[in-house]
Image (cartoon, rainbow, N blue to C red; front, side):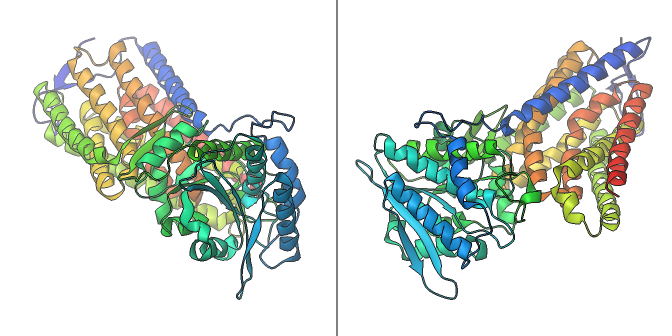
Length: 578
């Protein structure tokens, strides 16, 4: 199949175009489309492997291994009723925890702070053999008045009891271990503030490990750390058996109003790590935050992180200072990629140079033009704006229909998932159709390079403003530019080799961006559906141009199918709820 040159308004010079596959190749079009869909599906599946929680260890397991089964027995004893600050149930749980810790062989004490709200922190210390400073494991035992707080944060309290049970039966660690089960977290982080301000042990803390929950299920994710985290992140990756961590979460968390005890620890000068599982939002701060609704797998992951990291940090020198930050993210399961934040700006500069090199390379080979690439950028921006408007329209319609049950739409995953996926299908179908139409005027290379110019702008912005998030844009763009230069070297880009390159690099982009997109979706919910659709539409830069090279019938068939499926998913779920 030969390439042909053609002149268009967008391409004033003779520029080689990718021809639409034809000449009896409808089957070939369909085969390529099937391969594309299979690879995309496989990449999405691989990107979700990291969100699997570990298998539950039963209560009969060896005492050296964290057992969610044993922790659950404790949780059933105290996560029965709401235990807000000052309530009788609060006092009952306080006494239960004091007795449990005493029976485990430690000597707990209560730090009392009198005031408008009487705060009673539960504190204990396990001595180390040669302590330079201490590892602190922390959570809170009070709950909101609305619910029994099995997840928030009873799961972490039960994990602490199981961790202490194991530590006192094991060989002593090098460093001391401080246990802080704080009070009054739900009414203003009162216990954490009292500990940091008044308790003498606060100055001994070398690493603070805080555990939270904003839901009832999902993996235990590292979502917050501190400035100067280069060393602690590296050690976290070594110490955690199933680490899940994304540096963009710290950037995102700073934009949210949520605060935890770790905020107080960090402001008090402590280094540390903050963990939470965040799925199952419908149970959060409600009467349904019960033991029955808590995922035992989430409890297992919380506890494994806690025990493993206490052991790891408990046997190392905690006095070494950090002098930089790390960029980090999971790729395929629990493999964490990490590098110094000092490399963010050099990587950005490299990408700018790489983009210029790629454009010049394509221009010399008559595959790119300035006007065509600018037109591709404009189309990419319009696609993002269209995605935003579709989200705003959907939000308005759903809010009007479910005005009294908006929280249900946002928090119930069985509702929000199909609606979000349906809207993603609608957005991609419309973008694909628009690109197919415009593709008659702008070739594949210009469409793609124009969209990647938009990605480059995002890389530059993120590198300066949100360096922890820069990897989301930088690495997919790097892979894309590599693939584009390989395409330029092919005599016929519309070939098995050409499609293999483009589909492979699209898959790499998915592996990096989809996990970030999913976590953002879980955290902000479809309340921010417009922003979520814009973030999703960014991926169109890697997928839609491939579809554009196929025959119009194939592209139209796929787009219309996605559009129909998306509409059916949204309308069907809406009708079911009415």
